[in-house]
Each structure stands twice: as C-alpha cells, then as structure tokens.
Length: 122
Image (cartoon, rainbow, N blue to C red; front, side):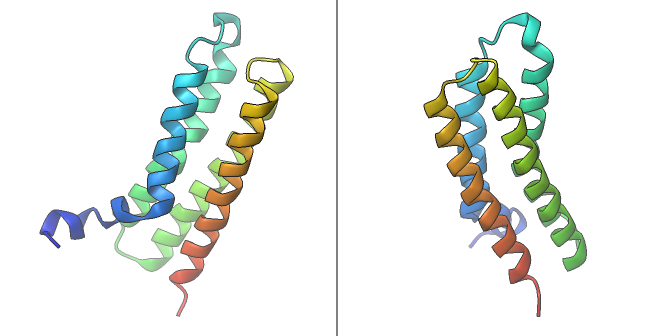
C-alpha cells in the first residue's frame, strides 16, 4: 500500500464508494428539476454529498472520537436525504421506483455507517 493509499484510506471503504456512486446517480437523475423546485434540489444535493464528504473528513481527524462523530454526521445526512427524496417523490419529481431504489440504498449505507462507527469501539 502506498503512502497515498494509507493517507486516504477512506477511499477503500465500501460505504464511501457506495455513497459516491449514489450521489452521482441521484444528481444526474435530478439535474433537470424545474427552477421553481431548485431549493429542494439544492437541499438534496447538500445532504447527499454530505455523506461521503463527512466520511472523508472524519478520516482526516486524528482521534477515534472525531472519526466516529463525522461518521454519525454522515449517517444523519443519509436520513436527511431520505426526507428530501420523499418530498421530491411527493411532488412527482422522482418516480416511485427511483424513490424505492434510493431508499433501499440509503438504508444499507446507514447500516454500514453504524457498523463502521461500532468498529472503532474497543
């Protein structure tokens, strides 16, 4: 493993990879949302990208407590993303099938984040 691999070890985490992939997928799918709904779209993008960003930031910290804190922030962002998607679905801006698929993936990401958090406990 190179120094860069060790430095950015979060990039090897499945939960990080999946949250990046989901972020890209949802942003591409929702980029054409009408301007009148731009605020909810911005909220969605913010909560969605907060998941991998907080994983990365947590691993940039020195203490286990700080890493755990950022992992739980990422988990909270996953929950916020579900609420944003629910609103978009209610407004018929994303399909029921897309909502269900994204909801399932966010559920799995949330479980993975909980497991990652617990993995730092002695």
